[in-house]
Length: 340
Image (cartoon, rainbow, N blue to C red; front, side, top):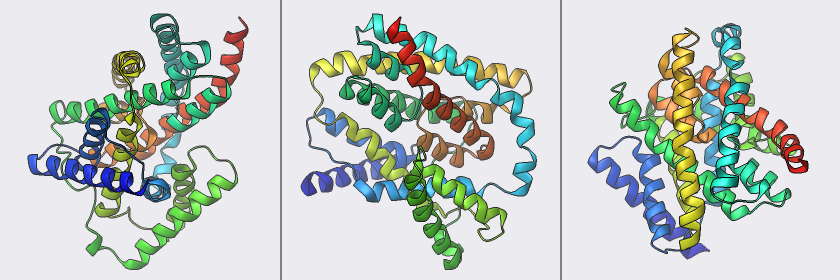
C-alpha cells in the first residue's frame, strides 16, 4: 500500500506541475486528477491518500463556512424560488438516467437506479451496495460523471466567461495571522469528527462548514483559508477521483465508463437547460446558476466555485439540497420501482 501511495502522490505532483507549466486552469485539481486517471488506465497500482486526504477536504467546508456572514443569511430568502426548482431538476435527471442505464446498458435495477442518482459518490455507493447493486459499476459511473463535469466546467468558465482559473484561490498563507489558521484547522478537524459522530452525510465538508459558519457569525473567523490550504485540498480531491480507475478491465471500460461518460454528457445538457431557465427568470446570475446546477461532486464544485468567484452561499445551498433530497428519497423510490 505504501509504495502504491507514494507512486500515486508522485504521479499527481507530476500532473500538477505539467498543468502549472502549461498555464492550464485548475492545475492543482485537474492536473492530479487526469494524471492519476491516465496512470490507472495504463495499469499502474494506485492508492488514495486515506485520512490525510479526507482531512484536507475539511478545508473546503471551512472555506464555505467562513463565507457565511450575517449579510449572506439575510439574502437566503431570495433563493427560495431557485431552491424550489431543485426537486424538478432531480426528477428530470432520474427520468432520463434510470432508463438509460437499465435498458441502454443492461444494468440491474439497484445499480441503474443509484448510478442515475446525482448524489454524493460515497452515499450512492453505500446505498447501492446495501440494495444489492454492483459496487464497482457504481464507483466507475459516478467517478466518470464527476470527472467529465469537473473537466468540462472549467473549459466553459474559461471560454465563455473569460475567467482565469489558474490564479491562486485566495490570499497567500504569509498574509494571514497564525491564530486564524490554527482556528480554521481546529474547526475543520472538530467539525469533521462531530459530523461523523452524529451521522451527518458528507461529514468531512458539511461538519466543518457548519462549525466554521458559527465561528464566522460570531466574528472569530474573519477570512477564508489561504490559497495554499485550498490548493492542498484540490490536490487530494484530484487523486481521489483519478484513483477510482485503478485495476480497470476492458469490459468495465466498455460498459461502466462508457455509461458514465454518456450519462455525464446528457446531465450536462439537462443542467445547461435549467441554468438558462434560472437566468432568464431572473432568479440568479448566470455564473451562480451554472455552478449551482452542475451535478458534479460537492467538493469539486466548491473548489471551482471558490476560484471562479461565484456566490458560495447560493451554490452550496443548492448542492446540499440536491444531495439531501437524493439521500432521503432515492432509497424509497428504489424500493417502489423495484416492487413494480
